[in-house]
Length: 297
Picture (spheres, rainbow, N blue to C red):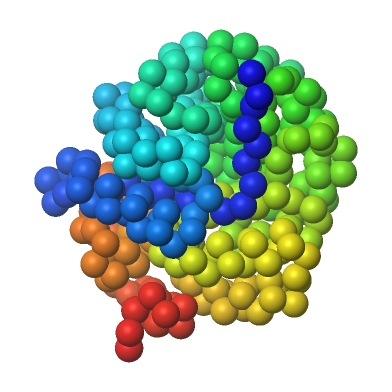
């Protein structure tokens, strides 16, 4: 089996909800279509941006099924299947396989804080249990522990582990992975603010939050970076900066959902313990949308 690589811009999709808290299937389908029309290279449902932590197992399966159906093979679907229980992570991976996803996204275990050898054992157990390509996700701000460069590089030797979404914020660590990774192993930015720097270091793309809101601009930035046109990349980064900053004034995806609601893409509904954007930030979001052309003044 040839394992497909990931390169370019992926969107960490939000999960639209109705006012009653149910998944808004029509809004999700419209979002997927719009993302593909805008040039996104792959989509990533049921990650932290997709509020997977407050989706039931059945809802998580259904969200991925809907996304797979709506993409209709046009772009890869990298389904979040994370759990800090390795057995459950394997079960979720098999479930995602059954609904047709093309790739899996797994964060390092949250809360347990295993040593590095435990992180290795966790990911190996997942990768051994599926023939789907696995993307590692290092996000210590959410998991409570960092996946060290040596750990990522050890895991990169597994034939089913094909990429890492790096959101450690540690450019030294990320650069070390890029320098020493095996051929075909992709390094993707997990922080919109660091995408340009990671591309300049030789990275392969981004799994983006801001591309929920301005997909074509993020695609243009990444495409320019991958082509080595860093003058254009920096210009686009500067243009996106108000949105990149606004998207994280409160915990993701709170600002992103507020922005998408202003754009008429979905209702501004989150699941507790997440709550709608604080009122004092509404003008910040609106101004950022105007700055990137996502909203008219």
